[in-house]
Amino acid sequence: MKTFREFRTKQLSEAFKAPSGEKLVKNFKVGKKKYDANITKKGNMYVAYIDGDRLDAFKDEKKATKAINDFTKLMGK
Image (cartoon, rainbow, N blue to C red; front, side, top):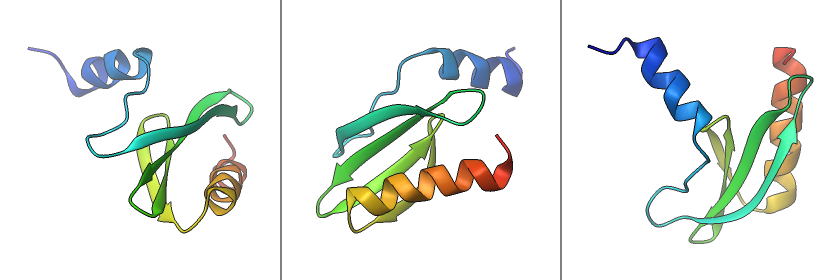
């Protein structure tokens, strides 16, 4: 049986796939260790992801990008 760590590592090595109903708008690298950051659009909201984990939903792409950068600075990544 796979452990949680093995399962998570395998998922992170795969390319980001936007969840159902969301369209990938922007992807880029962020932080010192160059984590994958993605912004998708669902309806009229933009959803921010860091390393495949959902951060939050925002009203525009600029705020989502700023939130991703602020989060990585705050966490020291």
